[in-house]
Structures are given as C-alpha cells and as structure tokens.
Length: 398
View 1: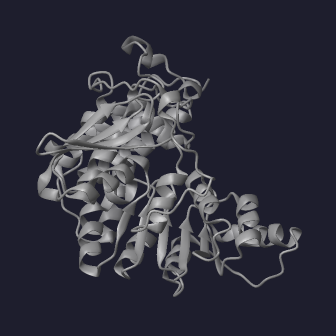
View 2 (view 1 turned 120 degrees about the horizontal axis):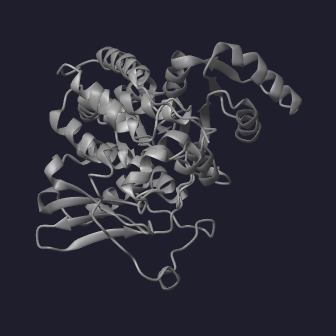
C-alpha cells in the first residue's frame, strides 16, 4: 500500500531530507500535503516536483505570492493553498494522509499533530517540542486512539531500534548520547563572551538556529530526557546522558544482565527519517545513504556531561521530575531566551537564568486539554519575555 504523507515543516532541513528519502519512490510514498512558513520559493519548487493536493503557509498574506511563484514555474495544476493552524489541521486530516512527519520547529504544528493522533494516524516526530510541551496528553491520546508515534530525531530513533532487542522489563537504563556541542572544551569563564556566530557552528550536525543553540547549552539533552520518558515510558532515574563527540553511536540501552545495545551509523538524518517512514520494515539504503566505515572512524570517546558548566541539562531533568506544566514552561522559556540571545539581547550564560526564573515562577498544574497546554505555553512566554527585559547586560551580535 502506498503511504500518503503530510510533511509539516517541509522547507526546513528535516522536511527537505524527508523529501530526499521519498524522491523516486512513488511505488511506496505519495506526498499528499506540504506545510511551510514563509520560505515560498522552496515550497513552490517542492509543489512543482511532488504535486501535493494541499499546501499550507503560515499566513494568509503568503497565499497569493505562493501562487505567483508557482505560475512563474509554469505550474498550472489545481492545488488548494490554505494558511495557519486551521490549514495544518486540514492538511493532516486529508483522507489520503496516513503518516504525518512533524518537522516544523518549536510548537508550530502542535495542534495539527494532536488532531492527527486523535484521528488515529501515525506520526513521525522530528521536533522534540510535541512531547516536551504536551507529552502527557499526546501519549494518553495516542494510546487511546491506537496511533503510532515514531521518533525521527537520531537519539530516540536509536533507542527505538535498540528496544527491539529486549522487553521493557529487561531494560536497566536508556543512555542518550550527544556530541557536546561547540563548547565542550571551552573554559567556563569564557562562556559568558560566546557570540551567536560561534554558538551556531555545530561540530557535527547542520540544523536550525534554536536546536543548534540548544545543543550548545545542552538543553537539547534536557529536552530529550523528557521526550524519552514519554516515548518509552521510563522514569528520569533510568535515563542517562553521555557525551560522545564523534556522534557515531546515537544512543544505547543497558539491559538488566549488563549487556549494552548501541545503534551506530553516520550522522545523516535521512537514516532515521527512512526508518520511521518504512517501519516496521527496514528498507535498503539503495546507495543514497552513506555507510559507516568503522576503520576510518577510528577511536570512539565518551565522557559525563559537566552539569556545572551546562545547567540547562539539569533544568530539563528537573522539569520532568516536577511534571505537569513544568516541561511546557521550560520549553517556552528556552525558546524565548534563545531568540533573545540570537538577537543580541542576552548573553549566552543568561539563557539558563531566564529558564530557571520562569520555572520558579510557574505554578504547578496538570493541563488536561490542548487549550490548557497552549494557554500555559502563552503565559510562560510572557513571563520569559519579562525576564529577558529585566536582564541588564545585553551584548551585540557578532
């Protein structure tokens, strides 16, 4: 059966890699709907090539320009172009769609992903925010509706693969690995002077702005601990983080008998994307995916993350252990703080300070509806922006 795809965030790096995976595989996949922000030229190229039934843009004022882009390419086919959250919900609800790739950044697309899960459709999660912001609600709904939620980011995809070799009861701990980001060896006293340009130079992965900064602060690992909890149903105490600069082992599982299962591959997002799209099969690489050469890779190194230098990691774990609204507040505060750092309003070391302040000021609650989740997210962002404004030492972007 041909799998009908809706790709939320099709013009970003994950979305483009997803289209690279499905390109030339018309016997297995059909791109039914695409959703993007304001990168209209790239979206127009994607529409012209894959001919979806629906295209979604962020704002209504982008609809006419997108049609102009398509006309300039000689595209004359009838396609429905819609906008905003309502448009995304319509895109995932199309009767031909049975697999949604959630690749949009931040909480964009959260409502659409939730509606897809409510409809019992399978979702491939490439953004951590869905599970971080609304993990309790999303997990419960997926279980009730029988919807598969498959991880696309490399660490959780690795855990998913390793779990196929044992039962849940046999697992002693999950071990999430991470490169350590660009400042793994930077002296602590120099972190205050880090500029956005330096923080955006990830040593391994080419990613979007926020996720690259999250890697530099190790907040990405804090968010991944929360996501792993909801995806795999393990408590914080059974989820560890290990720095692995080569990014060849993408994560591991330690079983009760001391055996350790690890998933190794080159650092290429097309592999976890293909795994999610073809699961439970494991499709052949067919020459387009690079194979791992362990001889060329040489030595592999591991170390414990320095929680003192990277307090965001501990903040992520604390948010999970406090539960309820706290992961949502953590995520909102981090997104606002990272934006402020990138625009020169905050120093690099101010990012965890803003997050901690927002967490301390967030009253405990357990949102039970998506409306409550979104309101909690809104309140946390307002508080985070107030916290940013109260900081007294902005720096210029360099």
